[in-house]
Amino acid sequence: MKVNSPEELATELDRVGYLADEGVATAAFLALRMQRPLFCEGEPGTGKTSLAVSLSEALGLPLVRLQCHEGIDAAQALYEWDFPRQLLHLRALEAGREHLDVEAAEQSLFTERFLLARPLLRALKESPCVLLVDEIDRADDEFEAFLLQLLDENAVTIPEFGEIRAVQPPLVLLTSNRTREVHDALKRRCLYHWLEHPDLAREVAILRRRLPGVGERLATQVAAAVRRLRELELLKPPGIAESLDWAQALLALNRAELDAEIAARTLGAVLKYSEDLDRVRAKLDTVLA
Picture (tube, rainbow, N blue to C red):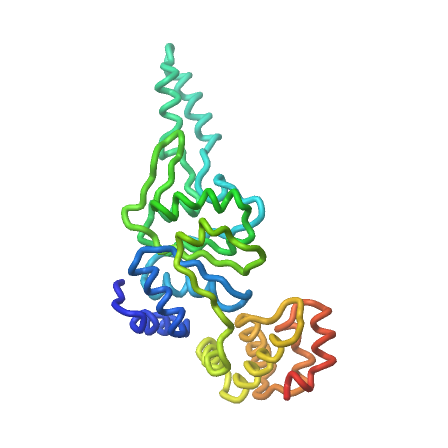
């Protein structure tokens, strides 16, 4: 699907349930129009991953997701060879021929039929698509360097096979929770956007859009309380996902308002550390004021 402006993209995102502000819509539109990766950074729970998912839905493109973690390497992210099938193939060649051409046999082992495509390679082969490289800050420096050719050229080189290049560049979104600084070499190849938590009105709108059963009063109370929680020194401040969980928990209990008694009983929907629970219970009246 082709979009002609940030406003049109925001409308399409709204259609699939993602309420993008002007900054997010503009950054995503420019990434799409300029065919540049978009590097989204921000606190956990600000909607970075949801943006990629929603873009794939709004644009009618498949989503390919690579979840980064410490120690991730090319075999997990790009490709690996199917060694068991290669071995069976080699044995079949040996059994079927009295004089085996070793060079031809080796070449036959490194063909596409034995190539197992992982997310990055799938994105290049299946593009147009949305490629989400999630939580790049969890990966190692070496993996960042490995990504540079893909971001520069929309291509990768497999030593035994050759170059694979995307016919059309995928829309690439990289996300980071800023647990560490990402190198400048990677950032230079991307457009950049910092995602903030939504303001009160937008968070209320998100709650009401995602949970149609939530009334205006309950949505406002939950959003306001979560905003105050974010101002406290918590180990894990709540994001939009926790706001949704809290509102959904209150709906499940048939509550139309958030008061101190039900808030104390349902804090586990919005806070995930015992230290945070203790800190908030001591200040619950302030949080709900």
